[in-house]
Image (cartoon, rainbow, N blue to C red; front, side, top):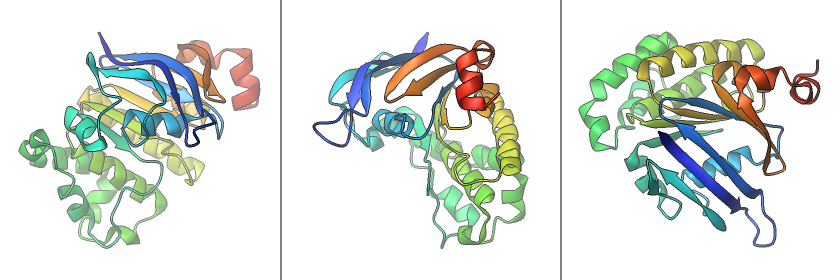
Length: 238
């Protein structure tokens, strides 16, 4: 069953310029899909459009068969689509635990608050060890863990991950993705991840799409994409 369908999506920040140029793709129930490409490909614009932050010029977005491209961001969150943003997402003057606890806005999230909190701390033990510290004191990797944790506290039914490697050292990225993979397997929910680091994203996902200048130019299983000459030469450098 298709949980997310994007059909001929066009959008941009300028009335005269389209960042996304007729994008179409879908995600199945419980599937992890990577949308990869270089800076400026339109990946974050896609995430903002799915989340309702940016309105499309044309095209359609369906979630579980319901059209959502005309909805407001909080209405989309209430459906269970929760995004981990590329930047920010945490409150530096609140403690780690305060950041997590204020993230339970959905009715389902409030009911599952304690269970989700235990899952976050189990998945990211560094947050548990520092739960009483201000979020502003955390390292970049720990802040990203907290941002992911805040999304988990919302009891997501679909998770959107926007370039979570941005600004992090390679070893930190590797550790973060390892913890995140364990977490999403436990939650058993569909995930859409957009990422510049193509190899690590496709290793994380089951299937992927390659974006260039607002268009999808390649698609297939992660293994097949990693084996293509174009991906190896352009994005991995082999």
